[in-house]
Amino acid sequence: MNISEKKAFKDRRRTPSGSRELRVVIFLGLLCLAVFTPENLRGIVHETLAEAYIAVSTFVAFTLFLFYSIEHFLKLDTNYLLEKYERFQVPIAALMGALPGCGGAIIVITQYVTGRLGFGAVVAVLTSTMGDAAFLLLAQEPVTALKIYAICLTVGTLSGYFVTFIHGKDFLKHKVDTKPHFLHTFEPDPHLWLLHTPWLLFMIPGLALGIGNALQIDTNEWFGTLAEYDPTTWIGMLGALLCVGIWTTAKNAGPSLTNLSGKLTETHGFKIHLERVMIDTNFVTVWVIVAFLAYELAMHFSGFDLAGFFAVWAPLTPLIAVLIGFVPGCGPQIVVTTLYLTGIVPFSAQIGNAISNDGDALFPAIALAPRAAVLATAYTAVPALITAYGYYFLFEL
Image (cartoon, one colour):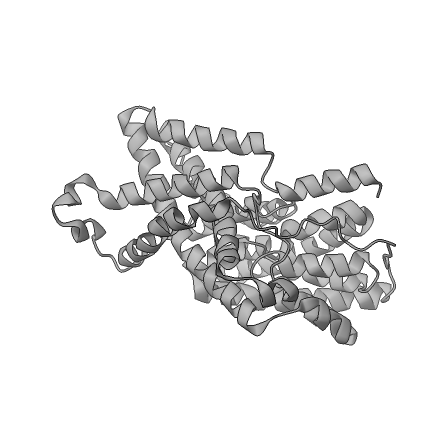
């Protein structure tokens, strides 16, 4: 890879959700929908933004905080694990992929492109990873998330060993002369700390409101005489817009590559800890809002019953979810998980997408080893289809 290609790849990693201009367009579009649309449509937008924030974003933030805290106190260094236990690289790679987020999977890919791991480990990690959609599922349905993790870990390990058995441990063994220094690592934003306080001022009460809603409590009554103004919706809507606004302007537009990085977890303080939670939460929030709004506005303008469509075409739903999993990045996969959580697509579709999607880990693989990336992605489709349709025919038909 030449210097210009490395720079282009680095730029893509800095903005995994698109260019700065696109992020500005998304934010301004949401702002216009929330302010300038007709009253009936504006009400739908306000409620959708509030639901995305209170029912999803707050729980995602809480889950991320717990996960990163565990990572920090255990001082996880997965590079060391892979180097020390090379004999067990396939199950370790699968385990790293099954962890929430893309960081573990990306570490495996970077180890592969420097020649330290075999192709079987790549297939294992890409099969087992669910990317950042895992945080969303863990926050909303933790029991379901654990089932998905177990399925992905098992399928990933078996797939990795199967590929190694078929092709041998040196198949497509990759070697480059440079260290993966061109990958974008987490860089604290010196200006983002100014937004920590307002972000928390919405997130903490938002989490309380989310818990109240989950317990079927009318949270507006908590505000006494202000209940008639629907304060829960206003807090949720403004919190959602704040998340999107920070996502639009922040230097780190999406999840960083330092999740599960031992060096950072040993040294970072609370501000950086909080910033990582903010960045990943905002990223997930944007895609959840996109999914929610796309569904609600489509129903409003067309009357089209998306849930009914998938019910009629249920046999194709797992296939569609698997194909969406081929799209690099975590955004489309978050949309699929959102559709599952809202009851629009069945569990078999969630299984297929979780196994087939490669999250952000596919970006470095495509950049440095495109042949291996394409072949590994194709290999993930086989267990994804078998597992998804196996569940469909056994439990959903």
